[in-house]
Structures are given as C-alpha cells and as structure tokens.
Length: 274
Image 1 (cartoon, helix red, strand yellow):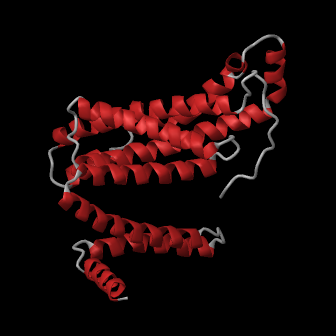
Image 2 (cartoon, one colour):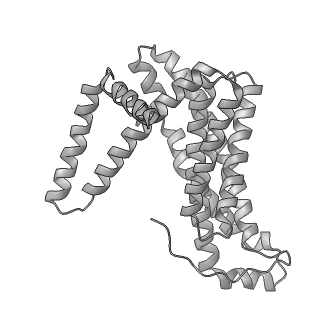
C-alpha cells in the first residue's frame, strides 16, 4: 500500500513539475472547444474526444517515466523488451481490426514483427542509428506504429475482396489457376490500398506539410538543413518498413484464406471491432 501511495505521489509531483503544463492546458482548451461545438451540433464525438485526450495524457506521461528509467539503465535487454511489448500491442490492435482474416492476430504479429525487426536491424547494421534506448525506442515506435496501420489495412482490404469476390476466385481455380494466381488481383489491391497514403505522403513531403521529425527538430532549435537530413532518414525508413510489413501481411493473409489443396476456405464475415 505504501509503495502504491509513493508511486501516486511521484506521478503527481511529475505532472505538476512539467515545464510545459500551461501550454499543454492551452492545447487541451482547443479540444474542449471542439467538444463543445460537437455537443452543440449533436455530432456525438465529444465523449470520444474526452476519452482520447485523457488516455493520451496519462499514457504519454507514464511512458515518459518508464523511458527515463530505461534510459538510465541503458541495457540492451530493456530496449529489446520495450520493442517486444510495442510489437505485441500493435499486433493485437491490428488483429482486431482485421479479424475477418483467419488467425488475424498471428498474421499481424508475424508481419509487424518481421517488418519492424528487419528494418531496425538494417538501420543498426548500416550504422544509421546506434543500438541505444535513446535512438532505437523512438525510432522503433515510429516503425511499429506505421507497420500496425499497414498490416490492418492490408488484412481488411484483402479479406473484404476475397469474401466479396469468392465466385470469381473459384472460377479461376476451376480453370486451373493456383491459389496465388487466383488471388493475385486481391493481393495487389490490398497492398496498394495500404501503401498509397505512405507513397503519396513521400511524394508531397515539403510541398504540403512539414513532417513531425523535421518540425520537432526546428522547434527544438536545430537548423532546417539538419532537420531535413533526419527527416529524409525517417521518411525512407518508414516507407521501407511499411513495404516489408505490407508484403508479409498480404502474403500471410492470402495463405490464410486457402487450404494446402488450393481451395478457398468457406468463411463467414465477422462483425468488425470498434
């Protein structure tokens, strides 16, 4: 009980010692105004706004405290453990979104895990980043978060197409096509749908918006050219990671819908998670 009280007191001290708390409160004021307008217009999103704001505040403060502890330890096992937890949570979230896919959680875990670990390994081996918690955890978080989105989108689009276009696929199978050949259109469409937002963002970067890493560095006082160089690394890193993850997710999704005898499984369409 004493340990719990000490933890609560430490969290309270941390919150009230935040240097930017007044500016955070002003930003929250914008959310409050949006919630009031939603209530006035009966848009019914004010409860979601309130929940999202509260959860994000608590979660980010908590992860800030955890990261401070891990940075002080500076041990590779702690860094690997944090990345593993991120991957598992991302896989669970993505699996819930793509639940029409058989074994969706496993597909998500393999796609996100292999895609993220492969990207991080190449970055470390290539000397782009050192394997230190200060570098790998933030970079890993960006990679895993984007990979989670792509995996969910691939599974959602492919499962919808495979279920909706069952007759066309079975016709191709009846004509002698393999399961890969019969589902190639759905494979390509699912991967393309998931990748288009990332490709378009890469094409228009600097013309429509300044990305997060670049903006953060400029606000922290770095020169624009220094910020641009880091942003280029982050941008190419993310598009590579999402491509790896998307390809793995698309391959595993198509395999999950077919038997070893190249027969399309008879599967009901489940209700999508909120």
